[in-house]
Image 1 (cartoon, rainbow, N blue to C red):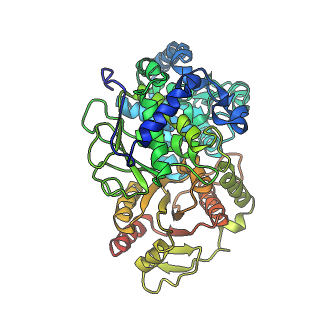
Image 2 (cartoon, one colour):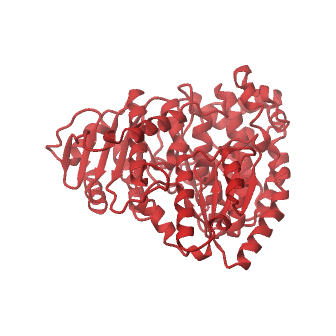
Length: 542
């Protein structure tokens, strides 16, 4: 990460006229930036005030998180003296995305478990347990994925003859059930995060800093970068980069560009922010996607990717790095500064869109549906027959399809259900490592479907874009991809396996989307490798 890079936002032609400048002037006149820095909960109206009052401590984390630096370093040295230098993070959403970006930017290894795929969890278990510490990161501890990982690793440590408690570090909110559990179990260390920070704004709390710091990232420098940016983003002036970014997002939305296409454009430089788009995706989608409005982040692989270089009137291409290709907005600066920039800009954009950027009213629906399916295992088994089977792909369509003309015909019919200006969400409930080629489906489909296309690993995306899918603009169509499980994993002291949980999450989310009137097509790969190859060939026929 290059500390010398100044935080900056460049704005091209977002919409015709002076709309962005007008919005910036309005924000300056209303002193929005300084009021946000002062944690004024009235900025988003009376309905949001009570929630905002307990969600604004992130504005000063560059100061209040300082005591963590020495504590993290002391624990890291203590662990290393015992030969423990492999960090596995069990966390979802805001508890995993920031540490993943921080460690990638620093080039230090961190194994992130934000999956229920048995194969991916088994791969993490197959690492050198003698050298492993598990960081269990959850505000409450009730997150089913994270609790499952904790149970599985604790059992594995014990089976290997180790004291499991000495290998588990917890990051949670004060007084949470997880904090109580950690105390009763005697876990190695408990780091308590600021409870007045929501998960997606928690990059500079213990949730972001502890796993990254234990893995070897320089978290002190990260806080220094945020501190350097704080005066810029909190100033009531026209060149405040956060105001410019927020105004650009809101102006584009008002002009019909409710999708924000994100890519990093500094590849090859010392300050590459690998994975930053995935972190920003959760921040933007969960903060703005509600009440039938919001900004849909579309993360792509580069400035030449489909959806970015050919973005239509429904999308705003934004570069994280130099203003390259079709980008109409760019943000530059070190990682700590970018975290603060996007948090300020997203919260301010929420004000301009007229929504509360700190709640997530639609996230619980998919969790509830998944829990119901886990309570009724028959709903997950053979009671649901596929519409058709094509090769190694079982087709489960919300509208019946024969599949007589092949998988391409099934896809063509499904894509035809998208409304004008809509989007396609590809949701892969697979192994993010062994089935990594599934991510190529976004590029293949985006280049042929004529739709902005997102890609998410399930259930990871349920903690980010999942809120937008149900609460944002209702113009999406959803392609779910599930796969056969060869070697399942039991979850200790729970009546389900990881494979069962994974399928319940896919079906539960699909059920909620159908209840919202959205088209859902689920393709189940009876052989993952062969099925993915057949799917790619079918897409290429479109």
